[in-house]
Amino acid sequence: MDRDRILVVEDDLALANVIREELERAYDVRVAHTGRDALILAAEEPFHLVVLDLNLPDIDGLEVAEQLKAFPTTILMLTARADVRSRVAGLYAGAGDYLAKPFEMEELLARVYAQLRRRSSDDVHHWGPLTLSPARRACTVDGREVELTALEFGLLELLITAQGRVFAKDTIIDRLYEDDVTPAHNAVEAIVSRLRAKLAAAGAEGVIDNIRGLGYVVRERR
Image 1 (cartoon, rainbow, N blue to C red):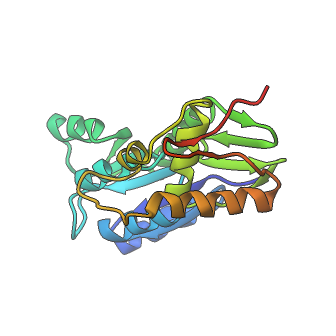
Image 2: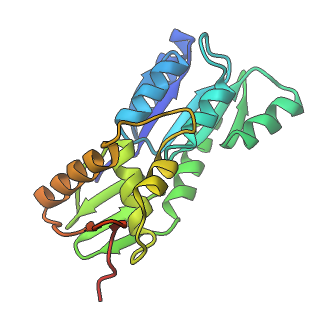
């Protein structure tokens, strides 16, 4: 059975190692010590949960959380900021839960489990042999997982959750990229090409159609 993927973002090396050792008993874990490294990892591979410290050396954790909204993941915030205003700001920034430092490891593990269980109860989408679970950040074909980048997963999620709707290239760009990011002129075509190749290799061909002059669509299967 595939294990949930967790990204731990913590600049305290000792604490990060302790958290990783505990979580690796049940999950696949990656660690980043800066906000920049965390965003790079999140763009390169999917994570079901991000355990995010707010006090990072390069980018404020709230800003990291805002940027993580571009990816279908859940955030559990860790911070020494105990005031109500900071907790509220964290929730508005996209946190699913908030844990103040210092904390007991048992409580962290319980909150991680609760967040992942909540995500696993969300809707699952099907297209022939393909199954997409935004909550679990998983794409499978005939039960076998297909590894997708964050942009590939985001595009597939956009199309498959609105089967039959045609999305123009500009709309896709708006959904996949932050306002201050200017993708290459052929970025969408490149993502579609890679996504089609991965799905076809896994046994799901013809998932995404290109409607000339209009955009892309996942047609409903009857």
